[in-house]
Length: 213
Image: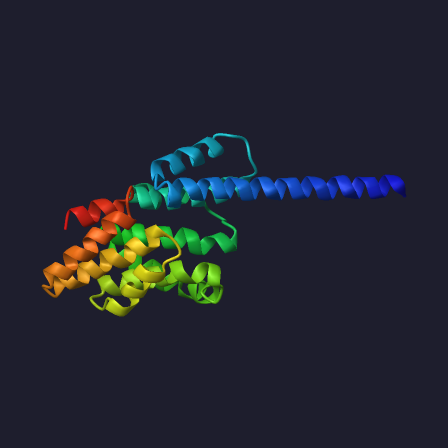
């Protein structure tokens, strides 16, 4: 009996330490991307992880995480063509992957394909949008899609710019506000929003997109 108890304690301790290590790893990665605002450093870290032996499931998850860095680095084509590495992905990672894929397609001008995938994955997004963790970035996908359809919402992007979960998400709000105001020929307000997009989106493709406006 004592041996069984000892075994269970060791097992629980091992599981706890593994979970703690994974949380620490995620926090370090998030710091590279969202605090330090260095997508390339984030990608490099993901490449280091992918170069090590790991389970097939972790290879898929790490590739999906890598697409987030690739998206913010503006390496959209790599997001699109990484698909072969992430077949049979865990369902709770699918919304993150499809967010990155659909946005990358929009930003490379493949709007028709982006809309087709968004329509195909509509049931998936409807399922996961009920979860607060996924809701904001799913809303971003729909907001960007609406913009490219010519029905972008000032109210939505203004709210995103104000309440986005991190600076990069806020930069989406400012950037698309700038785009909408530019289309309305309100250049002073557009410029103000593009400047905010550059500040909040520092180090990402949004900074470069806003500079070119």
